[in-house]
Length: 448
Image (tube, rainbow, N blue to C red; front, top):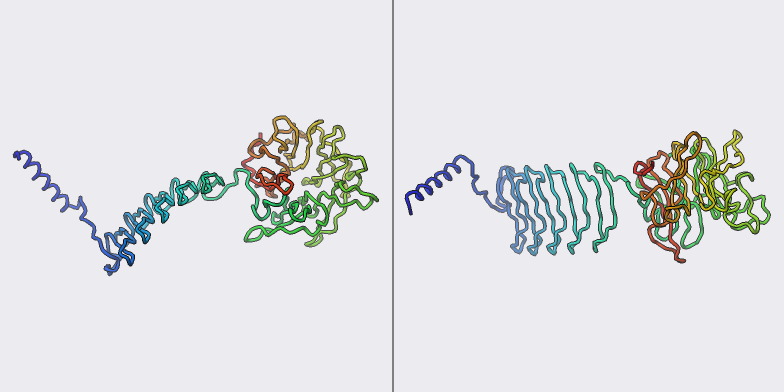
């Protein structure tokens, strides 16, 4: 060995010794069992724990008794259960959990014990289960949930840890929106704590108006509303909360031989905590269907009122074979003027129905068939400009689907937009697509 090489080795050894003395290279951490530590708060090093069979159970690094460094835990058969990184008793770095078969179960990243970045969970077959992003321990952006075969099941959107309903979402799935029954036309009391909607029961085949009440634990199981004793639909509570309008096949008391498919508009009034017996609106609104009349002639449905108590509904156009929206002004005595057809919304081919007024009264929403560039029944809107409604515009793919979409409405505070659709693909015993109730936050509507 040359003198030069010897000098280099001696110099290196001296440097290492100096570094150890000066603390630049820490001494090797002690390794011990937990049972051997009398005062954990003063212990720094690796703690080992074993199963009764001698296999490792836990490997954890601590500094002055606090988690600091890598932690490992195993299942009884020796398969790694989790791997985590700590610093000063807080999660710091990547954390991983594993299924008993060794497949990764979840992975994420922590900074000072708070989740940051992408977190993922996996099924025990290795398929991705959830994918979410965190910022400062709160979910942000899109979270996706998958089935065990990799099919996307649910997409959720979060803002600062709170779910935001940014796309059409089933409303109270399984309770109010059910797979077996048809549900449509949801409306709310002014306080927002009572919901009314139409359900055609799959077993009884009856179409009734149902009510549900908001409680501390969520919406109650729906029951048939006290006033709904016939083939009723499309309930609407007036902004004052004192009247509830709906459409019904129940016979008009003044008609000797009513037609079974003659739908008219009825109203019930609030009396204490109950609703009075319903009465039909006057003959200038409700027309009597005669033998030979074909739908939608003399068929009045979809009643709503605006903040001034004026009535909107739909029936056959006075100019075309299609249906259109009508408007009747509320008089001081509570009755309505003769209805006026909103002709600017109509056409000889368009079947307009299901009107809805925005809470500020400046937008009119409705459903329409047969319009160009539509997909079956679509939702449209028009703006009130100088006292008249503008040409309708399609609400676009933010709401409309390749299936049928109809029955728009708002929550009383205007935060949520509701509608009904048969897009879910569920079918009844006759093979007909089933309608469900959907909602989303109004701020995510795309309106020009």
